[in-house]
Length: 274
Image (tube, rainbow, N blue to C red; front, side, top):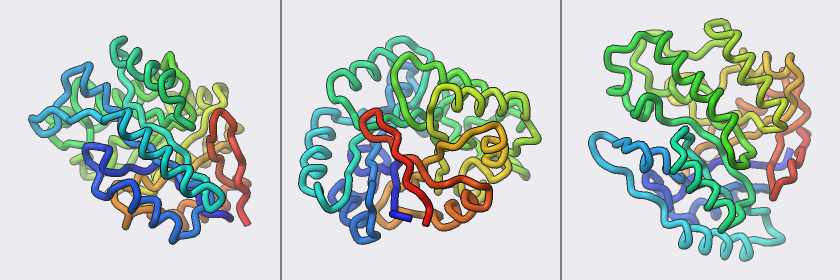
């Protein structure tokens, strides 16, 4: 199949390591047909006063980001389709939701990634957010917020890294399994299907397997009728573009998916497997 990667970050994100030009050059080197940059819009942090290891997270310079990304999109036209998007960290706080809607109205991104990073005022990337919490309670609270995020009052295309909480969770058994929360996960998966959204297979699972969500959840999504999946490396440096993609594609083929779906300006494009 043609190479696609539609969840990546550059130094326009507070945690990005490589400039946008380097990210795109690496994608071209890998033969990408579709490459999506989705730098972080951390308005969940801003609106809710969330800190990262005790410090505020710098917000993206949206005008500069979209200007540079659109410039590079034009420069690569005819060589690879560069998709200019954003990853919106969900919160129920109305102020943040208005800011996300304003970004969509002002800049018309080609796609939006819907993500949950923060639960109970802390980013579950950081082990400190788990202090005093049992595994099942922490994971359930995260999944409940994922379910809430599916009702966000702004348009989005991709539901990202389902199982994000498991990446750095400090438990002996940190994998998020379908069998642990079948009713809640069924609600999430059925809602993704009903809304016509895309479930992401994220290649940056860290300590929680090769990709997120795990194969058992992907199998259940398929059994429920879900057919739209995207692949995203979640790369924050050029060296990570396409990470674990072959493993993800192999699993998707085995399950029965026909290809990956790429969102482009409201149109969802099926890119078939070879």
